[in-house]
Image (cartoon, rainbow, N blue to C red; front, side, top):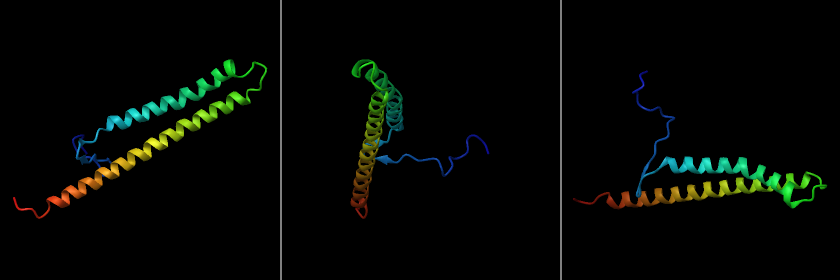
Length: 108
């Protein structure tokens, strides 16, 4: 096959919406943001809480639990954003179907 061959069926096609063509860079930016947050926030929370929140003689269990709570918060925020984005996509598709049905059968 040549490099100029048609995209395979597994390649996701971006649908045109009422607002125009969907921008995949926005999705990649969100993924990058949550990836960076998932790496830096729990680690930062661990060290900051170990050094500044809990006394030096305290077990490291409490800073570790703080990091786990932050990691779960980041994960929960990612899931919330993903569900909200999916609901917005479903609403756009619904509006597009309504608009396309309204245009069917009209004489020009």
